[in-house]
Length: 168
Image (cartoon, rainbow, N blue to C red; front, side):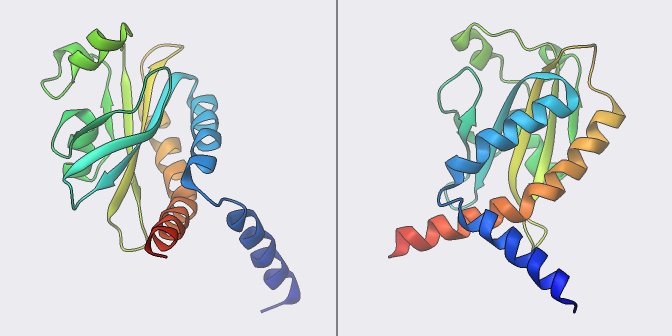
């Protein structure tokens, strides 16, 4: 390997090491995801297989959300290990309309994309709500799948660092 490759890896490592908590990475990831596809809101759900729960450490415009791993569109994303494009959410049996009722928000469309770890397990879901210009498309799904793959290493490392800190 060339010196340039080592320098690049070191620079990237410095950026990652500055993320001492996952909460520091999530707002930046969410803002970028919204900007990429032109969405109103973005929530990032983390998967807790031990507790069989999905929870947000970041959800735009609403407090923390915690739901069963088999609940909602994000639950379907975990189960199927595939992105979900739902452009008529109130007609989808997996849609959790009670969250809209509670928050007063009206969901017009949803794009939920899995985030995989290095073992190809779903560790999180990026959920985008309400595309500004029309419905979510196959192209939006493709770009967000690429984005999820791009950020997956950062999230996996941040989660491992958090677990390590809790263990000490």
